[in-house]
Amino acid sequence: MSIKYLVGAAIAAAVSISVSAPSFADPIDDTIKARRAYYQVVGFNFGQVVAMAKGEADYDAEAAKNAATNLQALSKLHLLPLFPPGSDNEAKKGATRSLPKIWSDFPGVVEKVQAWQGAVDGLVAVSANGKDALGPAVGEVGKTCGACHDAYRAKNF
Image 1 (spheres, helix red, strand yellow):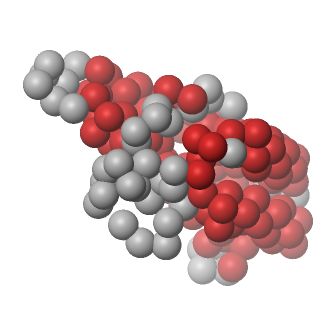
Image 2 (image 1 turned 180 degrees about the horizontal axis):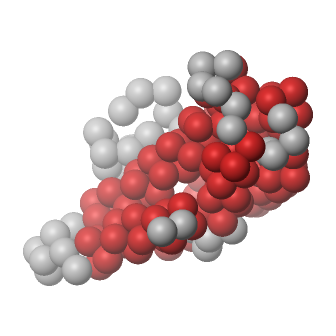
Image 3 (image 1 turned 30 degrees about the vertical axis):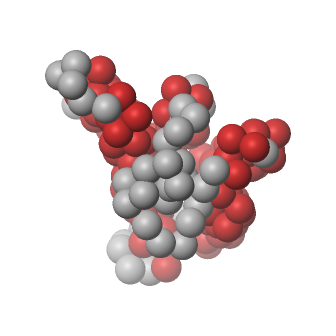
């Protein structure tokens, strides 16, 4: 079974759980749960290449390429449904770190997502070329993640 299949199945399961929840459940809460699940899958895949780049895990070209390709697929998903108005940390204290600024600065969000997508594409391009090639690409992806987190994610719940 391929990693792409597993990632797709995990996301589909998270979304179907939120869609099939009882009618008394708060749809915003369910959406936040799905959004957090999405980012857990992103973090899981990015963590693999980070560990290889740092030497915390042995470099494995196939595993690096698979994780990078998974990130690429995840980066291309249409995420707007995971960010409905009212799903910010002021409206849903304790459930999310998403700042309300996401909804008032949507062009800035789009710009940061596009930068992340480009960095992930670069990671895919070099992921099977050895640990020395992996490190700088992982760093670029990390910078784009950090830029979005700094602007649109609260430090704490």
